[in-house]
Length: 251
Ligand code: NDP
Figure 1 (cartoon, rainbow, N blue to C red):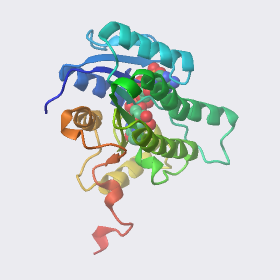
Figure 2 (tube, helix red, strand yellow):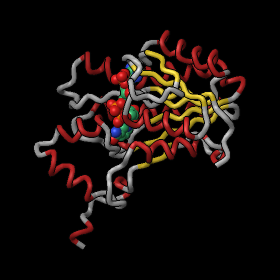
Figure 3 (cartoon, rainbow, N blue to C red):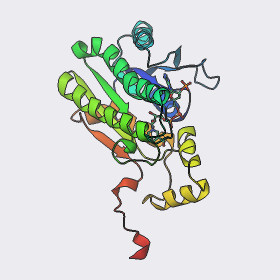
Figure 4 (cartoon, rainbow, N blue to C red):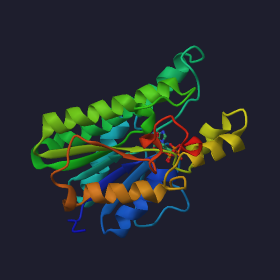
């Protein structure tokens, strides 16, 4: 894939999917700034610039963009990966749950897009948001999380429409990608092992996802192989949500 060198921000690069995206973009030769709410992780590549930032805070989002601009030159690629998950139904959710999920998953994405678009809207850029299949089909007991990811998909389309042709904006909807967040989801089940075996059986590709599966999709969306692609949400779930509810084993 041909790719011009980008100044990239990846939010939530301390672990999981975000870390795989950071590593892939570095391997592809880009300059990468990443963030999380804590200290710089010891195992983060020296090539990545770390900023301690909470994307739900407007000032932190602006500071993150400023760091990228002053360190590497104007930001051209933003990957909104940072996210949190609360495993509750609406009836069980309280105001703190609402504030946490909506402030990070919705306001955080909005904050970062708004800060990046100050320059991108004029000079061009590329935004990739990490949504979820949970924004399309409802994972049980994840009501606010599911709704927050539907917001991400909707905002993605709006940015593509409002800020094209200077800016492309797409979302990736991962399925079950084996990270701490996914483990927390399975831990909810009455029998986590059985739940994992059942979920695995619903994957036509025969395996769960790995963070690098999402990083591969980011690499394509960041490349000039995808310049005709904008306003779209790409499901990367090993075929899980392609299946009808009928059990193929019974036919
Ligand atoms: P993890 O929980 O493993 O990692 C989340 C990352 O986000 C961490 O680096 C965390 O760092 C960071 N983060 C959380 N809140 C904030 C904040 N307010 N400001 C800055 N950084 C923050 O999650 P995954 O890697 O599994 O998920 C990454 C993304 O992919 C999320 O948006 C998630 O919703 C989405 N996704 C994941 C799926 C999966 O199966 N794993 C499926 C579908 C979507 P720190 O805690 O240090 O702040």
